[in-house]
Length: 229
Image 1: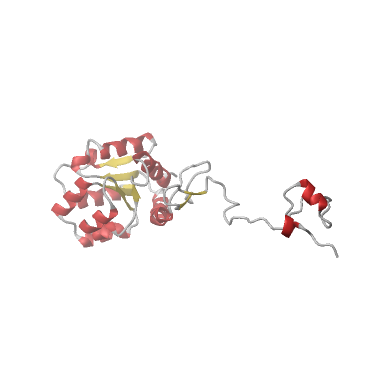
Image 2: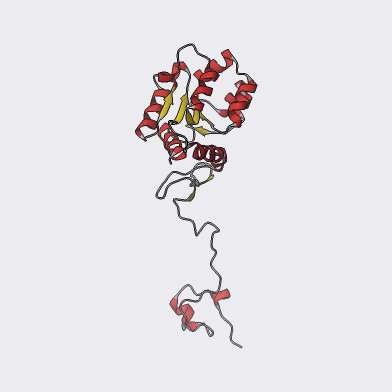
């Protein structure tokens, strides 16, 4: 009985296929070895990709609008999902701003101002501590007030913020109550979550967004998607 010669000689050319006693060139669509299909082959590049740096898989969030090109790490998805769910519930309440932005006083003219401007440009109504928090008032008390009037709270964590928190101290009970609401997103800029955990273990225990992963504009784009109706 004739046997296919593909396992030995292969059918890399038309003449090789034609000389095979079995295939004989009669069926051009046949391949001896089945092709391998990636488990992600059915997903478009816009919904899942692998970053060139560390090979980490990124994907679109559940709340990403059609056509969005913004991708998130699995850690970001885990952190932002409960925030998004609570923000959706609060969207039914009137007279709430989208975001409460807390920052250190020393960042008011650079990083905080940049982030605030980017959010406003993207149509995100922002409760900005530079504009809305009285000088000398309690940081956590104003965070609490701001969160009560906003759907999401973001804290811009910088070296200046870490110094302020370390100097004033944070009541674990109060901070725990804020984090329990799933409304707070730390944004780390020019520092790390490890540094944050050393100063405030409770706040640092929650991952968030970081400008190490992208630019400040990338962070603002993710916040804008997070609070979009």
